[in-house]
Length: 346
Image (cartoon, rainbow, N blue to C red; front, side, top):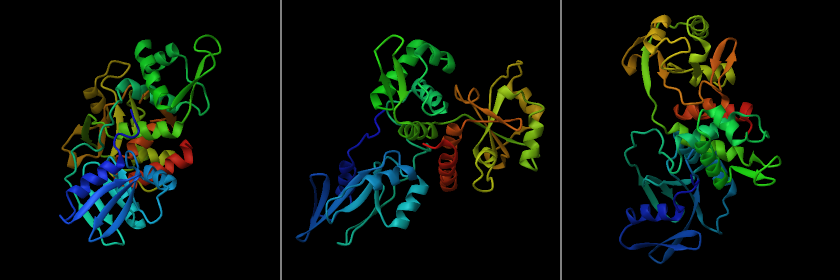
């Protein structure tokens, strides 16, 4: 699960190799990429911004230490719309590992390349497994500073085998997101979350890039809050959880909700009702995506277990809501950042 999967210099060099005129030459000098043309050399300082969300870009720019006269170039796997907006406003060059780029330097070097977007919302990060992600989500939903539960306890909380849980925790240790303290075994041995912010960055980038099983439905919703209150009378609490803009409006209001109501709904509730029965009870019918008023999403292993009631309405955890908002375009990223600042805190 490496945070960095590509040398940012290599990504810049690949773009330059396909964009520069024949009389220009690109090379590497220390941490910089150089471009020489007509006896004049331009220095570029690539900085790695990971998954490419606005927070990733801000962190990369804050820690950048370019050599004198070098032009900073932000490099990421794939920059989100909000990150591109911020970079454009700041006049900062960028390159994606897929070859898309916006480069402009005082020396006159200009590169503008756009490649077709991939169908998936975000690229999957190598090394993640669903088991590792489930354990990471468990740790992120726990109060900051609490020790990581012992392997068997964590396995029971997540619903995994102890062996799978142990492998997941070892992976998190290896990445530096968790760390062991005390003796290797025994009463004094324990794990702590060493870098919750970095773990949230990595987990949310992976989670927001996962394809989801979604069902578009329609109902006469009217006022969303009133409709949700009605829903609590026909759906068992354990069978669903609100997410997306409607959840953000209740949890950390940032802007008026937009788009359809998004709900995680189990395939079968604890009373044995299947999804068809649940839809019928709520007055929902399946429709084409364009006509959707309510979108139902298949939950992950911990989505419903870690939800909380808000005036009777189950809402996903803050970290799950954060990851889901990241898939909702520029405004969603802004809402996610607001949620992270006001409620998550890391």
